[in-house]
Amino acid sequence: MTVFVVRDATPGSDVQKLERLPPSAKLVYTILKPNRQMTQKDLIRETYLPPRTVRYALARLKQEKILVERLHITDARQSLYGLREAGSGMAIQA
Image 1: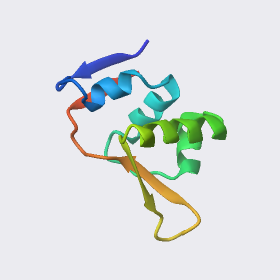
Image 2 (image 1 turned 90 degrees about the vertical axis):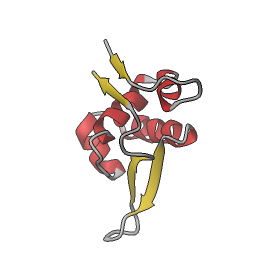
Image 3 (image 1 turned 45 degrees about the horizontal axis):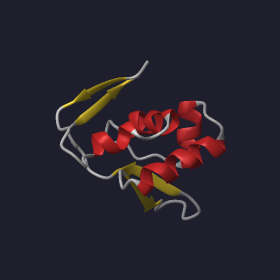
Image 4 (image 1 turned 180 degrees about the vertical axis):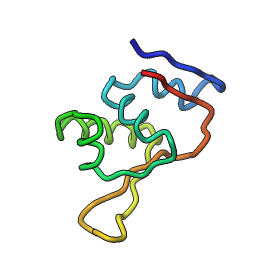
């Protein structure tokens, strides 16, 4: 069961967007929450989710404008994923 600890639940906030997302997207969000940037391979390794599920979760987070995709400087074939805004006022416990 997932527990939400919410400080800012204003209409249209990231909290409401996150509540509508599938569990895989919430898990990816939880992994990225401590101000981390990770590649897709790192997320697959960390979450134990299949690659296709991680791609779907990243796409949904990006669609909701919660996630930011950046170019990986040392390896241009990969992207780094991180949360749009640090300290957005929400936390998730799984």
